[in-house]
Image (cartoon, rainbow, N blue to C red; front, side, top):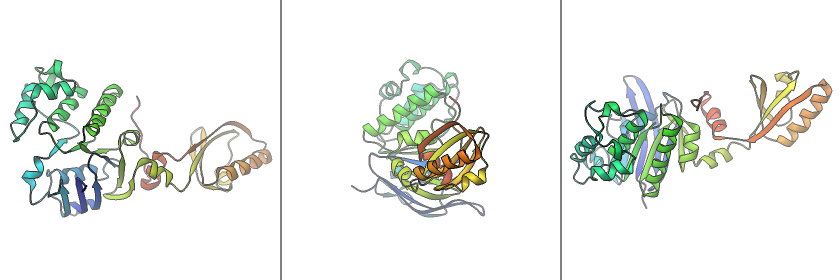
Length: 308
């Protein structure tokens, strides 16, 4: 079965500044595909080119077998879009918004069915300016599904939501996949991408630097494991960096964080060093490479998940 989304050598310039630089990827039918990257990496610009909100500088985009440039109108019948924020008239109700958007398409879903699906049945006649942030995002999803899309594009849909609203939105996205819909999701939340996506593309400074399933990217991190070490007194970074198997040392405040390709050899050398320096071990934790480790190694930027 051919891919539902094909992007080849996509470029987008704003004046002389390239925001997207030769991006290429495919999204298979029924797949949740994530564009993962730090703020300003080019995720939103890429999505806006795909859905026709911006003209790409160069490159090829194919959606559901259609050339997005040549058959732009036909493509819009097959896609749904939910952006970071949804701006509607303050006084329009959820029911009126769904009916209005449905009138733009040849085939649309009835308002009561969509509002019930996205948990807005009791808010059907509530004005937009009275809805909470989570309710507005659910309404955005309802509007994205009004035309029975084959592909749905979601641009950081959980930004600014509280943990409960985010969890509810995650379940709606999983339901899209169960219903056979293809989802292209942009996010900078690492945990969100790991939980939801079948495959992800990590994008940084407008370029894709890695593509694959989350577990494949983590497994391909060169076998690196992380040791979080707390000693009294703290051991010097240069001595820790010289231990067998260690590739990187980071001062993480109260702990030292070591990346190792051979944990057994590192632990053995660490024990010897501690005895020589008469250092007391306070805490030691060892974990396999995470998606965060892969992300930071590829982008060299710190990202922090908002506190729950």
